Image: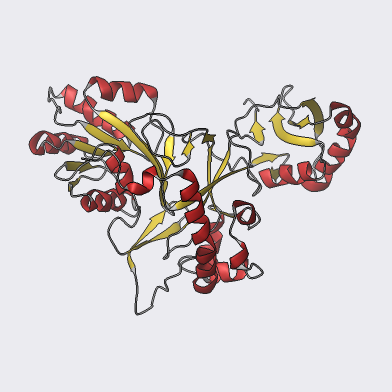
Length: 416
């Protein structure tokens, strides 16, 4: 029984890079030809030239929050899908709604969302009975994991959310060995079983998603003999990355190109620096090109000890949309990025909004390459803040490398 899902996971990294960059121009051309949105957004792009990460980084980023307005203007999917809703060769099997609302399609075929790879890494195997507590109502998570589990030969109990007493009874009666759902709900189920003096010791493995897996939760599950792994995905992209037995970061899925960019921009950051997760998908039905998830993470250098050779990320590190309101006006990360762009001496900036004396104040902390040059340009930077945001702000010059590597561009430090 192989510990790896397929040979793709253990490819030489250079081979993988060559293969995805060879496929990239074809996917760009497919998106241009088949998706009305990308036909317009990439109208001036020669797909044949988008054959490197540098070329990809010059394309515009489509951020998740933009989908709400796009879908209002062009129902139901904002012109992003490559399979027309009324086409005779319709490949969509289901349509879901996420908060917003944002409507997400599901194409036909086994494991369309590609979560089987993460289940395999978590130890799920053919013949396992899986207790699936993700919702089957409106959102796609329940079907994401059911399709993945069935594709590797598992049997699924579609428990869905809520009804804790019934969840405990079903696990006690059916004796599943595997759980999928959020970690917090698994904890609730176990605690309810304890209250009723029911031992759910059939559960031996779990794959959790939808929220962060806290160290205390992992320890609690381990004490009960449950090996718990986590997967990271979205309703737009499916699986993005997954945890392995090595327990060192999350390994990227094989059907994606990952970029970590500075929030508010499309500019990739150096390896190890925190930024927004931007994904290019090779999905033919829903070809998302440079899709900004709004999630923050960072690349974990090196290869996983488990033998998988794809890029690793550190997991979910917060949200990239740090928009805040100051004196009645919204300030966006894109505006901070525009200020920095006007001053080459600034290599990183962090806008802090505070109210130390009860009055709101905003200060742009600028990490500069040349401290002397930074001191002389503080007045110019303040003028740029005024020009870009229409608001007055202070500027504080700090040494290069002194700002925290947490991906924050705007910090609201006000205390109420």
